[in-house]
Amino acid sequence: MLLAALARLTGNVLPDPPAASAVAVERTRDAQHGDFATNLALRLAKAARRNPRELATAIVEALPASSLVARTEIAGAGYINYHLAPAPYARELAAIHSQGAAYGESRLGKGERVLVEFVSANPTGPLHVGHGRQAAYGATLANILSAVGFDVAREYYINDAGRQMDILTLSTWVRYLEGCGERLVFPENGYRGDYVRALAQKLAAAVGEELRRPAAAVLANLPADAPAGDKDAYIDALIERARELIGAQGFRRVLELALAEMLADIRGDLAEFGVVFDHWTSERAFAESGAIDHALAVLEASGRLHRQDGAVWFRATEFGDEKDRVVVRENGQKTYFASDIAYHLAKRERGFARLIDVLGADHHGYVARVRAGLIAMGQPGDCLEATLIQFVSLFRGAEKIPMGKREGQFVTLRQLRAEVGNDACRFFYLMRSHEQPLDFDLELAKARSNENPVYYIQYAHARVASVMKQLAARGLFFERVQGLAAHALLSGPQEQAVLRSLTRYPEIVEQAALNRAPHALAHYLRELANVFHTYYNAQGFIVDDTPLRNARLALVLGVQQVLRNGLALLGVSAPESM
Image (cartoon, rainbow, N blue to C red; front, side, top):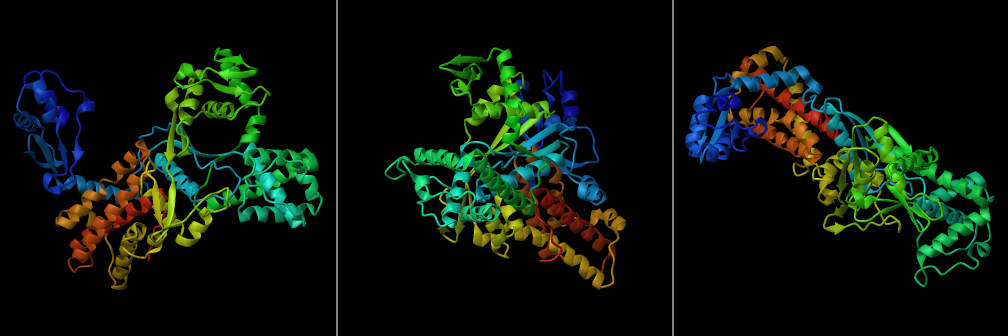
């Protein structure tokens, strides 16, 4: 309509037609200002050399007739407000009923292949509450992207190589030695959680005392540990001593047991949380596949590598990075950076057009480096996106719960889920933007009150189910066709508010996908629940007037369907009773 009006005005009122992308119509925040509004007249007034209100009047007069619009009005300095006719709302309510669980889905993504990599926590301990936020965000983003037509795969990158795994292995072996009766001081830089003792017990059950070595032999001639010495130097020396005493095969045996147990724990924890991955990629297997050598060969062929001081460097500064990066150290070992860029090249070579990495808040410089590597290997830099998930703080009342993984002072995701439930976990993780730190209120998450947002939304869904049970108990039936046909009876202010809120759902899902913002959907569901509860408290639904009863039931069942659809994307259940 608006484009047609502008075309009519071009050449006399307007010198040139504005670009279609510049013609924006937005929903109004206040229903008194109509359903939609545009400030186009204010933005075009200068080029048209007209007063904005005068231009707005010309635009309104040029609008073609439409059965979708009841009336237009000019407000303020030159805003154009549109009041919709009942027909588009009735059509959308009918779409909710006909499409059911598919309502809100679209083809916005056009089948573009997207790989969402998330969590990817080192398997050196159970998942903690920070990992839980990454899991909830990544899984929900993948759901939303799928809903709007992207071809999405979910991937977990297992960091099962490198020093941290060696430290876990060493920590497990030391606890195993303690269990065998050896007296050792546990290394300051070791993993101290109770889960390490459980790993040691499993190791003892598997090998007996086969890997036992005297404490004196373990500790002989080691450098001092902290606080008198360097804790990093000490634990590195202790790792080498372990390899000497039990051999590479014995060390590998401990590592494999610890890794298998930790991965099983992580997989089970995530599955119970409703987070399932399509691919689990092992860093060690990836390195052994030759993929890193392949990526380095691509860089070499493009002239992006140079040698200095015995190491091989990538010319990252040519692509905007702050310094060149080592890819192969003097000792011949490939760096984490080499592995990272090779991994992302492999993602592209697997056919994914867009790569979305969900990372912790401490990965600020990571993206630019990896993007530089991709560009140097002939890939488009904008194929890589990263969302940095800010930290989570747990509160019990006014008390903040201390957390630190290495020291064993942390709350696991499993513990959090056991206390507040999966639904509260998923929703509370998602109700604030991932760009903001999250204060997770345990007491609020457990509260069965309207102050608890997930309870408030689920209660709206359950209330509709209760209405339908009451209907059946009275021997009455919902007649869908008649209810949808009687939409003109839904003329009250609460009913209009519900209709306006309902029809926003497909837009919200697309906005959440494009902006990588699942919290927008969480906020919307709370708003929809609010307008429903207001309606529920103001009106009776099971009335004697059959057409009115069916119309109102059609409306509230539409609310229930949209709540159910939105909660499913968030990974939250939609109970029939509370």
